[in-house]
Length: 148
Image 1 (cartoon, one colour):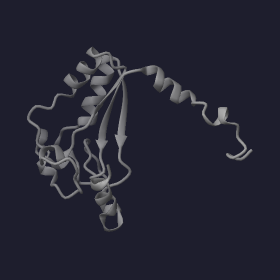
Image 2 (cartoon, rainbow, N blue to C red):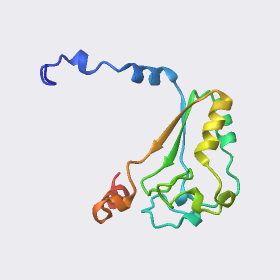
Image 3 (cartoon, one colour):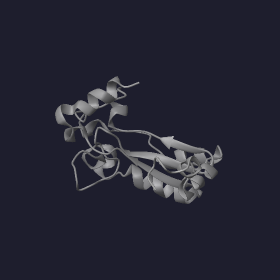
Image 4 (cartoon, one colour):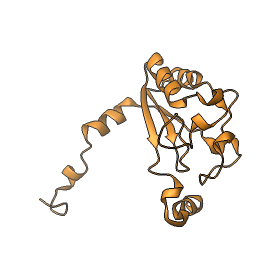
């Protein structure tokens, strides 16, 4: 049966995973990155990793507040389109390991995951598909900045 021949009820039937997500109810999304400390919403990967220098970053508090508000899960942007990784990784120098935060030993993803486990919440990680350097002429970043 092709998609054209598929009855609408079959096309519109949610998957078990989609149903579980819908039944989970309220979730909270956390978004922080190197651009947070550069005073800009969008970044193209040119802000130095050294700009990531939070003085009061408490993932435990974020997750506790989410739980207290009735959230069943939290989602953390672990890597946005600029390519900056909120965990130390061997795949790039553009991560918290190259920042002054906790002398380069910090791991926002680990702290968020530990807090979610501690407070009994589900955890989702958002990873943008690729850094702008992977785009031809950085067109994807220009598009992202101009899209509604």
